[in-house]
Image 1 (cartoon, helix red, strand yellow):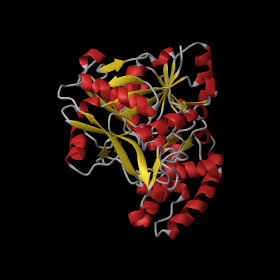
Image 2 (tube, one colour; image 1 turned 90 degrees about the horizontal axis):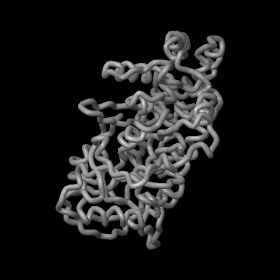
Image 3 (spheres, rainbow, N blue to C red; image 1 turned 60 degrees about the vertical axis):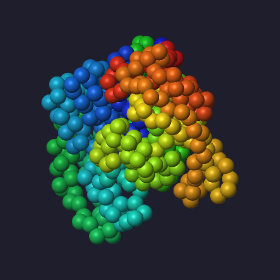
Image 4 (cartoon, one colour; image 1 turned 135 degrees about the vertical axis):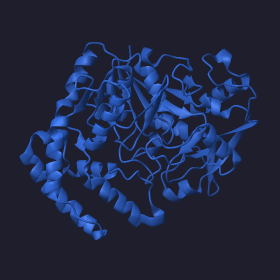
Amino acid sequence: MANVAVIGAQWGDEGKGKVVDWLASRADVVVRFQGGHNAGHTLVVGNQTYKLSLLPSGLVRGKLGVIGNGVVVDPDALLSEIARVRAQGLIVTPETLRIADNAVLILPLHPALDKAREEARGERKIGTTGRGIGPAYEDKVARRAIRVADLAEPETLSAKLDELLLHYNTLLKGLGKEPFSKNILLEGLLKLAPQILPFAEPVWERLDELRRAGKRILFEGAQAVMLDVDHGTYPFVTSSNTVAATAASGSGVGPSAVGFVLGIAKAYTTRVGSGPFPTELHDDIGRLLGERGHEFGTVTGRPRRCGWFDAAMVRQAVKIGGVHGLALTKLDVLDGLTELKICTGYQINGTFFRHLPAGQAAQAAAVPEYEVMEGWSGSSRGARSWADLPAQAVKYVRRIEELVEAPVTLVSTSPERDDTIMVRDPFEG
């Protein structure tokens, strides 16, 4: 049996939560390996809707959840999320949730700087969630971060706060914001320590033991390939690497342990925040996709920008992300449209590209070239087999496979967990 890594193949919000939940029922452990509480997964289970940002989705299925070292953890946000899902009936204890002791913590000064910098950018803002993710990753690279293990060492905390505040208070003062008090921050961290430390351990060791015992591991990615800090539409990206290779480095396993890489893509395209979006629609169809698809950010509540399926972009994500198969979600949102368009590439200043180039100006100038397909009048909603789909919907899926150069492994036809067509079992490799 193979392990499985789930990553987004567009700009995030592709419906990874439902797919991870569906797969988690057959996994033994679910691992978050990058991002922070700037990402959100919505899971619908019966009459309950769970909105998760830091907690691995497998907890909803009673599976062991692991927050890997590649995640930046806001301890206040984590404890609030635990309290919220416990109120919904989930069991979250140190027996069901483990946190890497070398994961970086987000402190109150991180969102303060995040928001201050976005405010200073004015119309050129990146569109961050303002939750301090970027500054926390900056600290990690700059070797001044406070990590989970530091909560057990008050002297280490005190010394690290001195270095952090030298950096942050200088920046905040320069941006016209109030500086932070070391005593208040230190007191807050020491108060949080006994609530966080029982969950902490070297998770790489536990994952190695589970792997050797033949347990199924599901690696749960956040955001998506086109938001990857290296490979996405920079600078309108997240602050971590979102590709499948990060599942290994972000959880402490070898690359061979990652297994089958499942990329998630909507049957159309959405994006939250700023940045290039060649297939974006500003017309009635764009609004229809947003309304039918309930396109609002899980974390921010911001309306998502909507457009036609961009096969050139997904093909790029497949190659970079190491995707073995696609899960196509929200096919039912396209029901009843008489005509569908698929982007096959871009005209940029008179030259045709099959991918989005790295240059910021070139990305902004990209004009999509479309292939037009006939839509379908029947309903795909709730389909659980190819036979349940309208013939033209099957043709649409098959054409996407050809253009992105990857097989469609799963098709999701509603938010309900069981409304899924499985073409190939990712756990079978």
